[in-house]
Image (cartoon, rainbow, N blue to C red; front, side):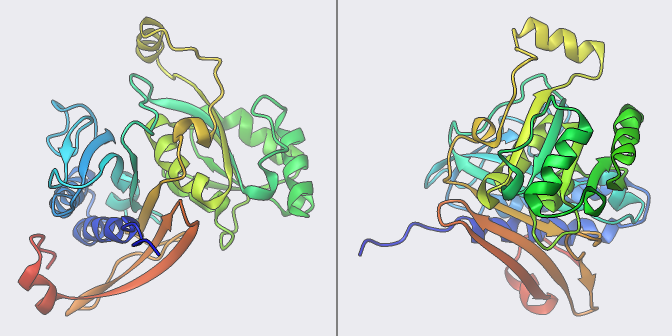
Length: 327
C-alpha cells in the first residue's frame, strides 16, 4: 500500500478554531472591525505554520483595503503543495458584533488553479439544494415550480420546506413568492455561507437557500457543497452600476450559469468551518475560564469524509506553544 496523502482538512480546522477563539472575545461588543481583525490575525498566524504554498483567491479584499489575508497574498511556509485558498475569518461580522447567531469562521482549500476567481464581481444569485434535489431545479424556473420539485425530491409536502433567505430589500418579491407557494422561511440578516451549508447539511432544518448573496462567499460555499454532494446554481447579479460597469469592461458574460463544478473544478478539496456565536448551524465558542470549547464541521473531498468535531482547548497548555493569544 502507498502512504496516504496528508489530510489538510485536519490542519484547516486548527486554522478556523484559532480564528473563532480569537474573534469570539468580541461577540456582542458592537465592534465588527475589531472582531474581524482578531480573526484575521489568528488565522494568518496559524496558516503560516502549515507546509503549503498558498495563494489567497477569496480573501478580505484588495491589498490596500485589507492588510491581512488580502486577495493574492501568499500564505504558508512555502513548502508542500501549491494551493488556492478561500477564507472568511468571520462570516457574518455584524452577527458577531451584535451577538446574533450563526457567525462562523470558514476556510476552503484546493489545488492551485482550481477555484473560480470572482474578479470585480461582488454579488451572485444562488439556488442551493441538497443532493436529492440537485438534478430537478432550474435557476430560471418560477419560485413555486422549484419549490414543488424540491419538495417532491425530498419526499415532503411544499408546506414542510424551510427556505433560507437573506433579509434584504432585494428579496421582497422572492419572499412573497415563497410565502404564496406555501413554504416556510428562515430570514437571516447576514451569513449566506452558513445558509448554503444549512441547505445541504442533513442535520439542519433548512431545505434550500434562495436569493442573491456574495460572489466570494459562493466560491467558499461551493467547496463544501461539492464535497457533500449538493448543488448550487448561480449567476452573477451585480447590484450597483459600478459593479456592472467593471464586469462589462472585463468582458464577463452575465448570462452564464455556474455550478459547484465550475466554481471549484476538482474533488481534491478541503473545507473547515468553526462556530463563533453559536446558533442553528454550529455551536459557538464557549469559554470556561480555564479554556474553551469549539464546534467545527470538517470535510475532505477525495474521500467524502465529513467530521463534526468538538474540541476542548486548555489555556495553560495551549499558551505554551501557540503564537495566538486567546485569554
